[in-house]
Image 1 (spheres, one colour):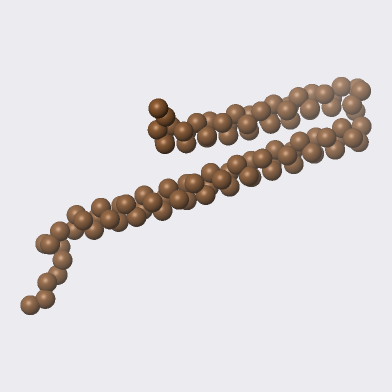
Image 2 (cartoon, helix red, strand yellow; image 1 turned 180 degrees about the vertical axis):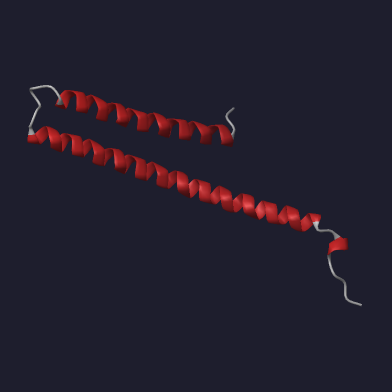
Amino acid sequence: MKTKGASCGALYESLTLVNKGFEQIHQELERMREHEWFRGKGPFKSLEQGVKETHAWVMFEVLEVLREHEEGEWTRLGRARVRQESGRAGPSSRTTSK
């Protein structure tokens, strides 16, 4: 059974692989563009720009979901820390009025 942390790590690993995949596409398109058949071809340049735009869009959308999740975790962990610190304060650290 996967833990919550393990599945989160797998998501970041997937994000890295998706990013590397787009980088590979960029590199291969660059190599193709250097071939004489593709030199100076307007539609090919548009294709490269389309891939770059799609790459940015995919990364933006995925990172936004991850940001929302991480923000929720940050809030949850911050609240847990405050509760723990409040419970540890004990009676000796509180001021009493007489």
